[in-house]
Image (cartoon, rainbow, N blue to C red; front, side, top):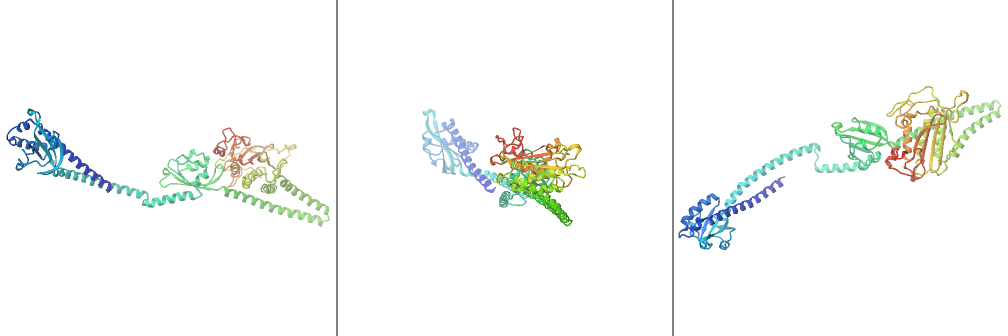
Length: 575
């Protein structure tokens, strides 16, 4: 600031000096040409004593014109007038050659009064054919010009001092405000914090999303872009235009804090935390996102393992009862009946195992079906594998995770068992974020209606088939079914017809895992009146992620990845 003001003051001083010198030259020119063109001067030059007539005239004109001297001289340089009378009659100190040639010229030259800016003009006599009969010199001394500059310099110095004072006060106020807003950090500390800020944004794997007061994206890190599937131009766009699921968008737009809320996107399970920025919601909010997909899958696997353990414990208890029965029959001397009883039990268990292993070569799916069959049996439900089920070894591609298959098929079978299993009393649906009551209707048998009012045993039929470039998983039950108006609601997080915490997530996870692998999950009515879920997953890598028709088969026409992820295609199919 000081350097700028000083530089401006110096420039103003130099410019003022040039202007003062130019002004002095113009004043001297005006005075010299006016005297040279005066008829009185021409007439006086013809007399024998020009000084008598010209000295009073030039002194009066000098004072009126504001110059320091007006000297009229003979062509040879002899002075006829001068501000100092003692200098009259002496030789003019300066150049007169250009004036004797008839030109008006200016120069800076030392004289009797000191260095001065002077102008010399010729005096022409019309009566003598325009001959030069005298010369006129007018000028202003450098001392006079310097005195004028000193006055201007004082003014410039005053302006500069005022500018410095105002600039200093403004700088102090701005610096104080900046330090208040930057919490006392200087430029170097701010630069270092910016570097740390950028490094932290790119280093953390969790998602970080910052929203301004208008609920537009102010900042998002790499993790946030990946978890939410945001495009490259997300910064600056309103949250409502990002194409996120409705419940997640509502959570991001909420003014109050959110803590460990579970939300689903097209491919992930996210834990969302948000807090408003200090100062209220007008200043925005900060949102953190954690990927809960893997943990949710592990939790599902843990539930399956627990179910298997319970089933094994029950089977061990039943095996002990059967063993006691065999031993008792032998003790009673009925060996043939004991052998028949044991053989029947072994054949029944082995038949199911042989059927599953022969039809499903994929070990993860085979183990899952066997375990679910045991669970179903414990709950009084018959789980069967349809005759057309067939998955050969090596058919499933490496890109199709076994964990996703467990998530999809395991949740569908669990829901089917829950729907088909006899319940002691009707249970109202558990409301959730998008809960809707399910309309139930009586369900006939899976294959045929019971005869003469007989009650059909609870059954679940599973189809697992790999053919025509796709994996088909179908689960049907003879339970109460799902109302038509609730066919889409059941896939939303929180929808459940069972009481208890933690429900309403299985079908949402199943659909999410299906979409993540480029497949479809649809619901229709089973022949027996219950619900039938059908999953179609592409077995070829080039088909993964492509759009599918409403029937679930892959189409040849692709559409935008974001549309497929959202489950819609321009042609009306599902992604």
